[in-house]
Image (cartoon, rainbow, N blue to C red; front, top):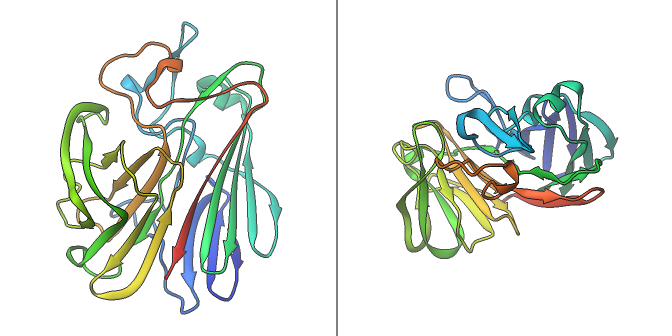
Length: 284
């Protein structure tokens, strides 16, 4: 576990999955979920090279079939700390013989954590070091503590929105069914039943930041995600945390789509190309 700190925040990250484990303010208040296995034994896994589940856990590429677990393998791999300063940590993961069996690409995945006053900037860099076009998705899955009973907590979007969630099947695949989430407002109250049908999957929205607040506390946490095209919001029903998940990519639909290059939401990198995206967590 490595930490970086300034006068406002202390941040800790572990090598396993390069996973963010702790954000504490100067008073020692913890903002990250502490992975209690009674609800969910993770803090903030990084989702790569897919987001969500694949149809039957498999995908096709150039006539061959490969298997990947939900959200990919990066979250369970040991990263190398390749750079460190007083305010930043840079972790890297490169392919192994094992990852090539399920994802036959030469990639470099860098995860960069940077402290800036009262905010933490988290950047993902994906480079294609191979000769073939590389399909991939990447996303964040951070869980944040609720400061008060769940019924007293809320999410405040940057803009007033009318939003629907795309519902997941019992197998975790995208259906063609939707359900309303917001109707011309920017306040989403949390509740013990909000996630009874799994995560809220938002594929069309205008906001680029969301603030987590409580009517029982003055503490506020904001997640900014400029450019991310999809967003998940999730918690175990009744759990004292909520995940705010910016994504590039999402789970498979129930209908087959053939080769993974045709997968809805998939990104593609040509040889030598690098993709970068950044989200930011701020404490008020």
